[in-house]
Amino acid sequence: MIATTADLPATAGFLDAMAALAGGVCVVTAAAADGTPAGFTSTAVMSLSRTPQLIAIGVQRGSRTLPLLQDGGRLALNILAADGESVSRRFADPAVDRFAGLAWTTGEGGVPLLLAHSTYAVLCRVREEVAAGDHLLLIADIEEIIPGQGGVGALVHHARRYHGVGA
Image (cartoon, rainbow, N blue to C red; front, side, top):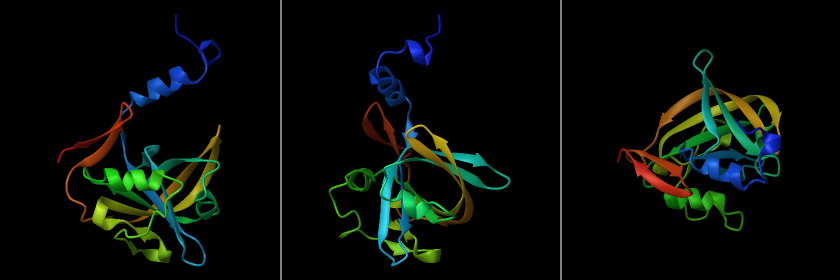
């Protein structure tokens, strides 16, 4: 018998199952109107469409960066290189100044780019948001793809640990 959501105990089983799903690690960045940079670590990212070129990103409703992304906001999807664990941890920690002492530059519209730590930075503009439980799913048009200088391979999160692959 297949369990339904109503049959599942609390969230532990859900979290364990999702931890078994390997995900590429990215840092989503944006800038406030005054140029202040913001960003967060995410594995909830997917390629959505080839024509038009779209991506989708799951964003927690309480994210401090979310208001910068809504209403057609610009963002950069910084795809971290295999050695990017420290950058991922920095952008996952709400208590740290995420950009202090970190190499970064700006792209179109002042969006922060983490090119020194990424294989690619994908500049996008949000076109739509979809309510999805305690998250919003942001659908974004790709405007530009910029090769990074972060080295080879990819950073992946699986079983609650980081793994560099293809390096």
